[in-house]
Image (cartoon, rainbow, N blue to C red; front, side, top):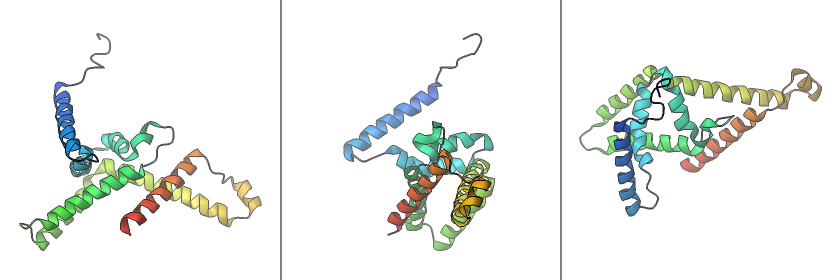
Length: 182
């Protein structure tokens, strides 16, 4: 403890927050077996992500990647991404259905939220890295399909484990979004 400090110590405020969440989760589960308090937290999480600094990108990745966050090849988890999108849609829908807010106020709120994305450095870092990774994998996939086999081997366009994971994640996200929209 003298050399490293309090490595394993959890701040008291965090313990109280966890206790409150577990109590709320318990009450919610008693009323609805499918209740997840995390679903209700996504609007607040999205708000935090908008204000997060670049150093918080690790936290954003852990939320987006879900179980694969600590794995060798982490990719965004389809269900996590869909839950975040549903939370965002719910916030927009709640604001639209709120009788106190007119259409022009809702439009201004949405414009303000989009402007705040410019300041969301951590979220931008994560999204840009994922878009670049997807474009890279898809570009190599197109090149592999269009080049003759001899040239393909010369250039070295073989898929690796990360490519497979990214393609699978993109396919799952595409399928889930299609099901969501239909």
